[in-house]
Amino acid sequence: MASKYARQFALPDGFPQLLKDLTREVLRADPRDIHTFGYEYFSEAISRRNNPDEYAEPERLSVEELTEKVGQLFVDADADGNGVLDRKEFKSVFIGLKEELSLTDKDVLRIMAEADENEDGQIEYSEFLPIAIDVMQSIYAKQDFEATALEREEVLEDVRDYLLHGMPQEELEDELRNVFNEADGDGNGYLDRKEFVAVLKNADLGFTKREINIMLTEVDEDGDGKVSYDEFVPLCFQLLVELVAGDVATVPQDENDLRDFFLELFGGSADEDGKLPHTLAIQLISDADLGLTRVQIHAIMSEAEEDEDGKIHHVQLAQAMSGMVLSLVNVQVQQDRAAKMKEIRAQDNYDMVMGFTAEDMSAALNAAFASVDTSGSGQLAREDIKMVVSETLPSAPPKYVQSIMSLTRPDADGMCEFSVVATQAFKVLQWLETQAQM
Image 1 (cartoon, rainbow, N blue to C red):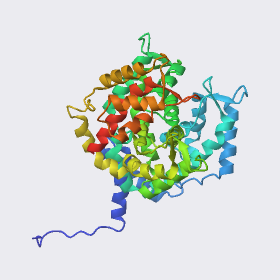
Image 2 (tube, rainbow, N blue to C red; image 1 turned 90 degrees about the horizontal axis):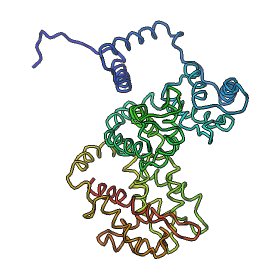
Image 3 (cartoon, rainbow, N blue to C red; image 1 turned 30 degrees about the vertical axis):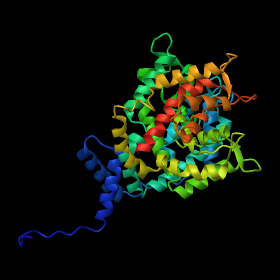
Image 4 (cartoon, rainbow, N blue to C red; image 1 turned 90 degrees about the vertical axis):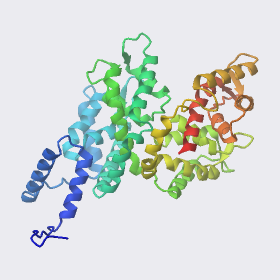
């Protein structure tokens, strides 16, 4: 019962929105000292109210104006006029534009994520200019979207540790350490840039081209041409999380939308019968930059029904994949899955699939493949690989076998390197087993 002596308060007009705006900024900034942050936030708010002209948002440049401005900055930075810039020079162009174009550090990283180097580690800016403008336009669209997206931001914060390929930070860093050490043959703790790029491209983590570009932009800050593990890993996880989290808004979040996305993705490459090879389907999914690892992509291919020629009807594939992929890219679903993932990874039998450890399964498959490979070429036809897999893993359901078969890469003669299948099969099946428990 309220006291009759209690003071009565009324919320001032606009207070709920004010509190909502503050909450959004706290979630974004994650300040160490919330009291100092709040003081500075409201001090700036008062200053904005009293000096509106000083804080007026700069008028955005048109596409033509952006193209002209950025293009001229590229030319100015190209001292020898050879049409290329190294990554550090390239980044400096956009750093110089941050204030004028209202770009954040994360925005600059998004732009740099699209910058591909040539074999000499240089970037041809004339080819990249239209891509950069497109990315900047998308950044502006995202800024507009986020202005009223408090609820979405809260969801992203809740699942941030699991947005990066469904992998918590500790496991990702362990994987990166193993990949790095394998490539560091002399054990000196360094890789040159070409070795570093090769490591990222060949890693089982399935880094996309954009993610590799992000990491290339930020490592080797001391400019010695070498990348150390200690220099790389502390940056890697947070950079990639921010990249993936920032791109969530661009991924279809509804199953029907996702199905339409795949129909368009696969339909453009299908033949007159509406079919496409499994290898092409995998490449299209990878190029779509959905943030899926190679293991996830091959596991998802368990939903694909191949004909006798190894082709899949694109409509069936789109319909079958949409629900499975939705569970990997939908932020609300990820929020629900995070706690369950922790439980599954903590189980004693997590490192066993159908009675095999990863090492045992690889050894068993390699031995079985070798017994059929009478020529010793290291290659077998797809039908022979399927036979060996079915015999070696007799308890594997047809979908599991199909996902393993997606690992095959037939050459012009229809022959496949079976060592890849033997090495990767366990990870694909482990992922499928994990999903079955979700």
